[in-house]
Length: 280
Image 1 (cartoon, one colour):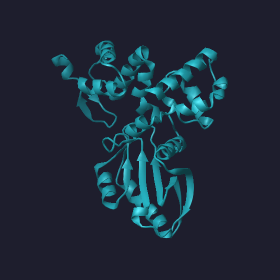
Image 2 (spheres, helix red, strand yellow):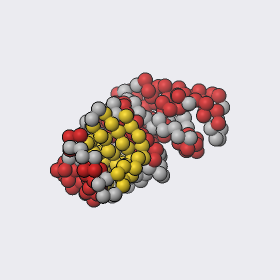
Image 3 (cartoon, rainbow, N blue to C red):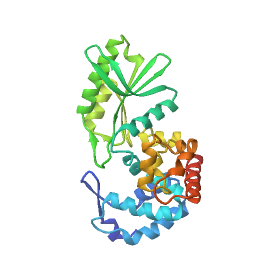
Image 4 (spheres, rainbow, N blue to C red):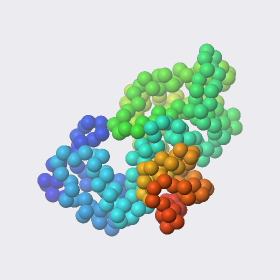
C-alpha cells in the first residue's frame, strides 16, 4: 500500500475519522469466506476507488459490489450487518431472529409476551425456558448506523426484569436476563450490566460471542443478505413472516408470487443462494 493511501481518512458512521486500513478491509473479506485470491481480486478493483473523504458505508458498498460480481455467496455474508438493518423499520423481525438464536441454543421460545411483575405488567420481546431457567430478552433494533445503546437502556431493563423475577419468586440464578441489539453498547452500559448481572449481546460485543458470531456459527442468516432478491422482494417475504434464508427453503411456494421480474430461473437462483449460504 502506498504512503499516500495510508494517509487517507475514512469517515465512520459514528462521525469519527480513522486512517484507511487495508488489513482491516482484508480481514472483513476473509471473515466473509473470501479466499486470498478473491481478496486480491476485490482489492485490485477497489483500489482506484479509494479516495479522500470516503465514508465507511460507501467503502463497504463498493467492496460489496465488486465481491458480488465475483462471488455472490461470499458477498451475502460480507453484507450481513447491512442486511440486519434492512429487517426494519419495525423491530418485530429482529425479535423473531433473536428468538431463533435462543431456540437454537436449546430454549423453548415465545416472542412478544406479557408477563406480570410484582408492581406492573411488562411486555417482554423474547421469553424462553430451559429446564428451570427463565430467559428474558429485551431487543433494541436500529436500522441506521452509528447508534449505541447507552447506560439508560440497561438501567431501565434491569428494573423491569427484577420486577418479574420477584413476582415469580425466582433466584438470580434461575433467570437469564439479556439485552440484544444489532448496534453496540456504550462503555457505561457494559459496566452497569456487568455489575448487576445483565447479559449483553451486540453486533460485535462481546468478542467471540457477539451477535455476528452467533448468526454465523448457527447459520441463521436473515433473508435480507440475499443478493438474488431486490428490496421489494425482500419486503414481500418479510411481510409473509419469513425471516431467515432457511425459511425460504421451507416455504419455496412464496417465491412463485414474488413481485417484479421473477421467473422459474430467478426462483432457482434464490434457492441455490440459500443452499450455498447454509452449506458454508
